[in-house]
Amino acid sequence: MDKTNQNKDKLIITRVINAPPETVFKAWSEPEQIKKWWGPKGFTSPEIQVDLRKGGKYLYCMRGTEGKFAGKDFWSGGVFKKVDIPNKLVIVDYFTDNVGKKMLPSDYGMDKNFPKESTVTITFDEENMKTRLCIMYRLPKSKLAREAILKSGMKEGWNQSLDKLQELVEKY
Image 1: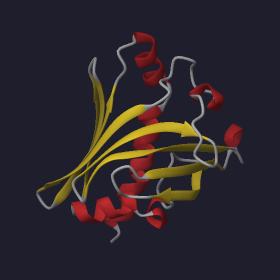
Image 2 (image 1 turned 45 degrees about the vertical axis):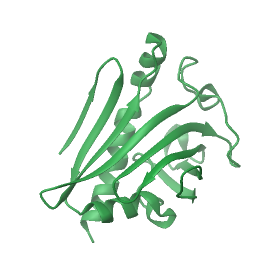
Image 3 (image 1 turned 120 degrees about the vertical axis):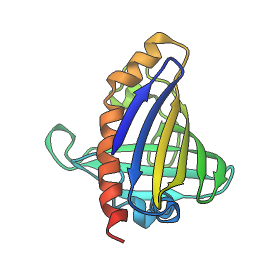
Image 4 (image 1 turned 180 degrees about the horizontal axis):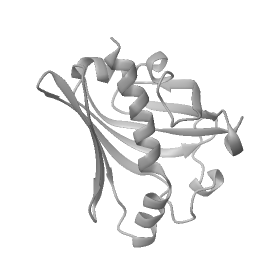
């Protein structure tokens, strides 16, 4: 079951996964596991780096495999602000180049109003021997920036990625 909702302050994507939080957190935080599910349909993840500690950084690459995105790399990175294994992560997320230098979202074809960075909270709550995974973005105050996020396809991309994550961890 997946659910996406939003209000003026938050965009929340929720998914109940038939696996314990420890398993889902491991798939979320270990580079070799992340490579198996990160990115929507039509994308692979050839490069993933994770320094899982407060103040540690991460760097992810999504590579398009078909259509207009075939062979195109999309890099994102960020900083872990809170790491509570296996319960919660708080991150600051942004677009980067292949070495982690911040890039403008418009460099990747996003609307010029798309925020330069986002604070994201990911929780892994045990619920009836399953995991309620929740991804919560704090939405910017600017109406134009909120609209840019909502029109970006981010919700659909996340849900396609979570389909792959769910398939991966439910096989364990």
